[in-house]
Figure: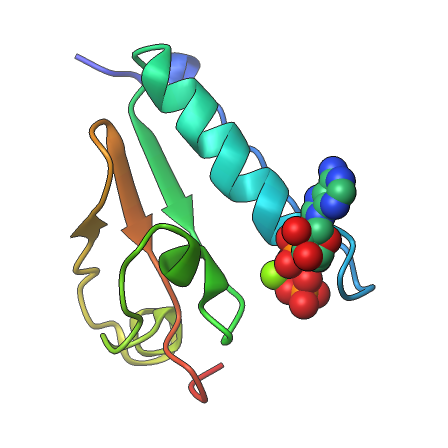
Length: 92
Ligand SMILES: Nc1ncnc2c1ncn2[C@@H]1O[C@H](COP(=O)(O)OP(=O)(O)OP(=O)(O)O)[C@@H](O)[C@H]1O
Ligand SMILES: [Mg+2]
């Protein structure tokens, strides 16, 4: 059973645009997944480009309705070992 001692949270954030946040997230997530780690990527950017980078569309409801309305998370599966929870365009 996974305990909080075995969960690592990595936040990739920077106010400046175009500095590699999305690229770092997708590649780090992929690298950890191919090492056998279970990875959940949570995209708080309303552009939803993590989903796009992983070959998914980003038409599902966003993180905003989870945080503000208490709706359940509905994760998308993408590559093996990874789960994506993203934010719909225009819903930040
Ligand atoms: N290590 C790197 N070396 C060279 N180019 C990079 C590197 N990381 C990202 N890039 C390029 O920089 C550009 C911006 O990257 P990215 O979209 O990941 O930035 P971002 O911080 O997520 O941007 P935004 O603020 O718009 O969400 C992209 O064209 C990407 O391919
Ligand atoms: Mg980005």
